[in-house]
Amino acid sequence: MKSILISWIGFADLKASKGNKNIGLGPIAQAITERSFQELILISDVSDSDFDEYILWLKTLTSAQIQTKKVSLSGPTHFGEIYEAAVGVIKKALESEDSDVELTYHLSPGTPAMAAVWVIIAKTRYPATLIESSIKAGVKVASVPFDLSAEFIPDLLRKPDERLEKLSAGLSPEAPEFQNIIHRSNIMKRVLAKARLVAPRSVPVLIEGDSGTGKELLAQAIHKANPRKEKPFIAVNCGAIPSELIESELFGHEKGAFTGADKQRAGYFEAANTGTLFLDEIGELPLSAQVKLLRALQEREVTRVGASKPVPFDVRVIAATNRDLVKEMADGHFRPDLFFRIAIAVIKLPPLKDRPGDIGLLVDHILDRINKESVNEPGYKHKKISSAAKNLMLQHTWPGNVRELQNTLRRAAIWSSGTTIDLEDIRDALLPMVYPSDDGLLGKPVADGINLMNLMEKLAQHYLKKALAETNGNKSRASEMLGFSNYQTFTNWLKKYRVN
Image 1 (cartoon, rainbow, N blue to C red):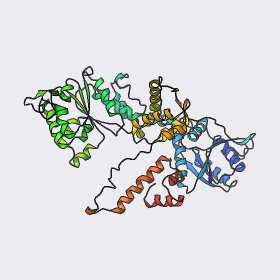
Image 2 (spheres, rainbow, N blue to C red):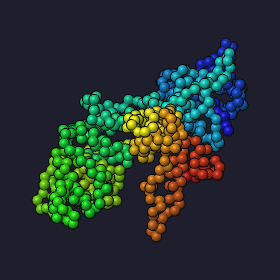
Image 3 (cartoon, helix red, strand yellow):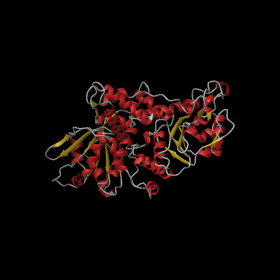
Image 4 (cartoon, rainbow, N blue to C red):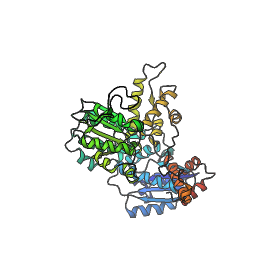
């Protein structure tokens, strides 16, 4: 295992290299003479002349390989810039190694802000040994006997969001209709700013997003922020209606219109009259139903199955889909005229993995709700979650989005016998999820001719990238996850399939 020391260069180090006897060797030189490291990675924002002189002096004291990184900071206490520089160096170090590495971060050189960032990184994203040094005490391992939650790290890097400021101009700071949509990230703030702008209007809205991202929750919030809020909100899962019943369900039917129609029935459009009709998974509708839906929206009237006289309606339509309707149109599966009728205001809900800072907030909110709902269940104990367990949840990609997060927490609350949900409880609660590939790799007809090498490349790239992402770039762990017999074979695959 290769040992690497990563440190900022501090003023004490520079003074030591210039012969200041009151400082001794300085923190870095003291560390490399008292402990053994195979490689040093030094980060600096000092002048070039001081930097070069220090490196030349340091090389006289060690045979370890020395890597350097010059950065430009707007200030020595700018947490965001310090964090970005440190993480960039660590990621590059891990990616360049062909074997396991043991990382050590030096807390003593540099500013207190730099030391604080090393502690944050070591306790969250990139675990490492922390050391500190002094002339009297020498070099020793720094004791930091607690875990940190990584959920607030995005706050260190957050910059003013000009797009959000423009969208939010004129909006009141309070929006109680949207309070059930738990968020902290700027990407969700932009989504909700758009939703709040369109909510008072009666124009159609199309909400796009993966399954489990909360499309119906957003539709309900839009309805509550509209003058129609006291009127009905009718939600329809278009994908759950049998094709032969779609017209009857949407538009209603007369008594005797078909076998089993023993009484007159109003459809969803009439039920939602003067309110909001939420057409969930509209992309699942067959083309024949799309034609009739388009006509109803254009004419603002429906004709019940078995009737000859149309019935007018006044409905605000909000549609949602987890499909790419633009691609569906190109493939001939969705009518362009219907798309442009419903897609006046388009809102895209991001997947949970693209919402930095939101996962920890959602964990706390959902766990609080689980505790309240379970308070009267026999033997239930009020649960809290450890920082280590929460960090694992922050690292997970959540392909099932908020719904998967919620179900995982519910399972973990069941598996944990005590009052704290720990790391192993979350590991037990996380289910392996397999999703069909959008490329249809296994369903292509051989008779039509296929490029097998191209398909194999896509498959290899997908899982190589996935393994690296889920291990935060740790090649050894990724290699084990993918079943490679040795680390070098995994590295060769990365090169072969051009995965960085």
